[in-house]
Image (tube, rainbow, N blue to C red):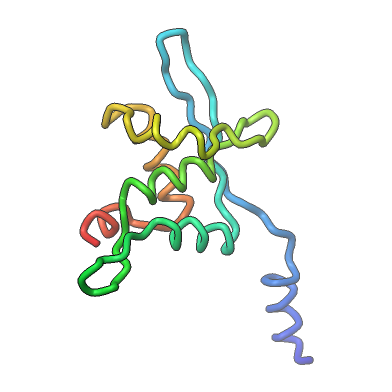
Length: 126
């Protein structure tokens, strides 16, 4: 193997996996609460995005569903900053969808989109 290839592989597929995260402090009536959003693996990102589409019955094309993308990413990426445990599960989806726009859900959704490297405006415009 060449020195370039050795160096390249050591710094990519052979390197320690370091995931980005962002801590947020949300303000609630009973005081502040810290949460963490962590970046997904490539595989997790693919699963989140692929499960966030709706098939157009006329064309068969898959179009992004913003609500699915937002809830899928918030459920998958929001963790307890102390334990790393997920803060949400599938049973929370319906409650998330009924949350007021502009509140805690939108804040988590904005950061989760950054962690996915997804532009929510693109998803809106499908």
